[in-house]
Amino acid sequence: MTAYLGVEESLTGRRWSGPGVELERQAEALVQATGLSAPVCAVLARRGIAPEACAGFLAPTLRDTLPDPRSMRDMETAAARVIAALDKGERIAVFADYDVDGGASAALLIDWTRRMGHRVTLYVPDRIDEGYGPNVPAMETLAESHSLIICVDCGTLSHEPIAAANAKGAEVVVLDHHLGGETLPPAVAVVNPNRQDEIDAPGYLCAAGVVFLMLVEAGRQLRESGRQGPDLLSLLDLVALATVADVAPLVGANRALVVQGLKIMARRTRAGLVALADVSRMNEAPRPYHLGFLMGPRVNAGGRIGKADLGARLLSTTDPAEAAAIADRLDQLNTERREIEEQVRLAAMEQAEGRGLEAPLVWAAGDDWHPGVVGIVASRLKEASNRPSIVIGFDGDDGKGSGRSVSGIDLGAAIQKLAAEGLIEKGGGHKMAAGLSLGRAQLEPAMARLSELLERQGAGAMGPRDLALDGTLMPGAARVELIEEIESAGPYGAGAPGPRFAFPDVQIAFAKRVGDRHLKVSFGDGLGAKLDAIAFGAFDGPLGPALENHGGARFHLAGRLEINHWNGRVMPQLRLDDAAPA
Image (cartoon, rainbow, N blue to C red; front, side):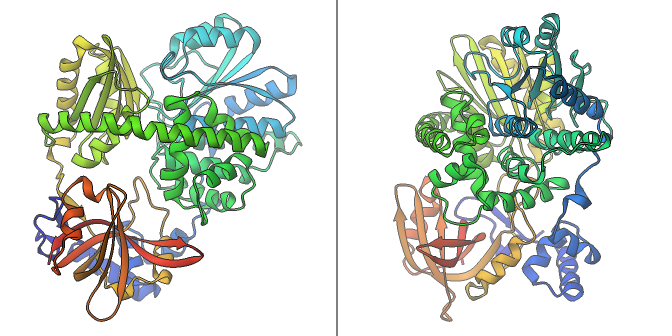
């Protein structure tokens, strides 16, 4: 296919690709059938939405999209066990992962049980000292004083720790979404849409989505016994945060969960999220961008480089003063995390580039790289290469790594296969993200084997230079009203990328560096209309210098439209991704 607008190599070294003729025809048919704008119909056509389904797609509801909880194995058993524990006044512990999904999942259970008149014990393992998931000492300690332990966002592969809890007299319920193994641990219930014996389960759910479905089932069982459970819709703000921050694909029920959750979040009723929004300096109604790039990283900062339970405590507290104090601490930790991340990112990128970014797997490993930032740096390598990426930090001979994948490549399954083959000590995850532990002597053989496994899935054939565009617009067409209409076809994120448009043959009217790395520009088409744009990280490569020193040249610009809220004003803005000489 011919390069879009003839851009074979942009300023960032990418080839531009646009919608094919068939997709353009489908979009035009949608315009005629629905009366919606062409940019919105381009999004709907790309998602394969038929004309009669457009109205429902633009206004997703839980009633139409939420799976029946009882379609998942062990769901009824899990809900019944939790209700029985409440009825008998048993002591319950929640063992949660240290990331946003784990923290939100724990907060869901803490909030729900609190409204049921019960208190639970929260336990979040330390990332460095204990690592991911249940461990034998922690589970034994919890089992000595609790008869029920609920593992959220972890536990599916924790055979020995769960058996240890059982031996001490505690029963365990697992609510997880990570890829399951051939056998299940000895838990009362393992609710996980990614169990190997599940068929047509909603595998796209994050752990908070699984917990929410369990609470839906618990509410059903309570009603069947003549009782009323807490209002579940008020919990959707937590589910939305976890879904976006855990990069769960925004498809199926996830779309409705996020759309409805954002509405709940906008009401500012949860003390922790209010404090988080304020410390993040959010000045507009929450969007997926805020959840993924402002709020999520701060919640994660506690588990990455601070106290592991800070995120879950923030999301579950009802005390505004406590929430403000925790949010402020997380904000400080997030600043420290960024500094640590940048040091590791530079070293990892240099190493990965030396190894080559065209391989099926891009990876880097180094001594004393903080285990709390290797996952973020893996994301940066993935973005730079459009390849699955692994980053590993070593402490002596012990290495802990994290990986991020790209659409269509199941990294979790590949890493789990490495563990089964004995090439690493342990590892697992899901399609888009995974973790692993290994010895220094295992590094090279493991990475070679992982590269081979990923190449079989097609990772090596992916085009790192392609930038997908949904069409062209002129600056005068980029109005706030159009952007709001485009947003109605969202939410956008993993599995549902936001539309990216090209603005052809425009002239830079103003260009200014912002900080050390970013660029703000204003451009027009020569007919009077102008549009502002911001390019984050533009000076990490050739994009910033080329546009800053444009010399009056004309460019094709490409990016995503957004609404900029500034000093009470609402203005359209382009989030600039790329440019090419016109």
